[in-house]
Length: 328
Ligand code: ASP
Ligand code: CP
Image 1 (cartoon, rainbow, N blue to C red):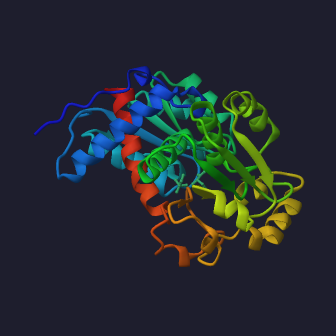
Image 2: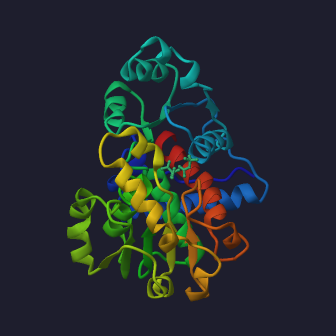
């Protein structure tokens, strides 16, 4: 039976550039839409709402989840995807980002961009006549990840207000934690946020400045730490860990060796494994945007509190909700 879904009206025709563009009403509506779509799909139904619409992903950086889930989301809505590959495109002949965007924009209703440079997003939005989904702009933001992370917390714990969350790992270059901190502090009455990072890899001051008014207004406790402790682990409803963004340190000029050495030295203090979870509550979740490297042990995978593989699947339904709202 064809279901009637209601798009989130404020997203219609809009680019998704930053986690800061979403209101609490937008987020609540996207979560409900994603959960409704999940129920419909998991009951064995299909959706044809974007029949005839075309999406082109432009990925100038590697991806497993974001690329595939945006493509799967478009296809599960009845739309089509152009199989554009940067590696075999005229980018190799020296074509600029703007001209590449103009080209794919001429063939598509929506573009999905991942790029190692933060400024590439604004350049692409400037060159496109259709909405651009930010699938990660350098160390900047990853807004659809923050939305799927919020959906994960809501679906797994029943609420986002009132939680205590630790963001762990490379908070300096990790774009998922930048977007998630902005989205959560702006829209939810969190109890406490722990920012757990080794020296040199702390949350950038500009992100802290950005969230400080919301943190104060909502009375959110914010605590920085250099490593995980039994107290932090025991206090959290969500342990959100991340890998060292090695490629960003390798690509930039100074201080890299120091930051990477600091991460290596701090590794054991950041590791989440089965033994560490002995201090955690019975009802809590471990999240990771993935890919994991060695900051999250495989011995956690069989623990019911390990939510990171479920988190990937929530991403499919959140991206369906986003594309449907932008294009419907
Ligand atoms: N996949 C996420 C990103 O692209 C996290 C990561 O790569 O560590 O930002
Ligand atoms: N979470 C995430 O963005 O994964 P990918 O880098 O594999 O897309």
